[in-house]
Length: 332
Image (cartoon, rainbow, N blue to C red):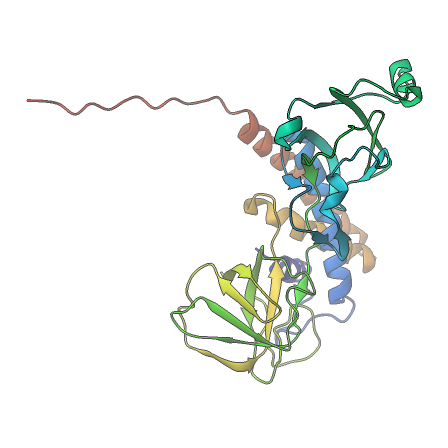
């Protein structure tokens, strides 16, 4: 499910959806999305603890500059020079470093090794005017500062493997779209898909003409309402502010120019656990409504989901290897 479906399911679970499709005015779209992201962060933290290599990203000093949640990152920060500072900024979605190595062929023998800055050898390297360079000692300061005790004397490019945060779950409805039957081309008008960093891990929900977008939390009647039981088209690429493609062709009738839409991001953990996130949002709804009995009920559901989630992830991570036997057809 995408985040709009998750929020809509939570509202259905707490009986906040009226018979005409509108929703209780106590719950706004902004807070539902905020609660969904809070729950997402908790689930992904548990997932990273259970699976050491979950959400690993790779970034090089020669990669294209990137942005994450409105933060710009110059990948040249991962390049080391003999005159550069000992301090290097890591990507804005950085959580933990898994590995770092040199990609410059002439200096491929250089290695990086973690060291606690309280180690006496670290202190000696900082004071040494010509320290050993074959092994670069580093530590991580604060949230995302890579600090080296003995930077390389030559300019080298580096690549890092790191645990990364996933983008915020969000919905996007700016502008309007056009779709053609049996085509995967997605065309926007007055849209800013790349400038506004719309994630490609998303689904598109079609609204109405005259740029009227679908809704999952609204007091306006007569709209197209997000359906938690529906399967929506997935986005493959967003190549510019107004152009993208779907992961498959659009099978239904043409979507006329000027039609409203919603792009809703998906979670990055196994989708069978999206219901856990819906129950987390439902719990927060009941806390806001001061319905403590219902809040406790959904908190219990959440705890059970998390227990199942941990068991499922542990099984996926540590399942025994199964070997396939070679097949030899009978020869007569």
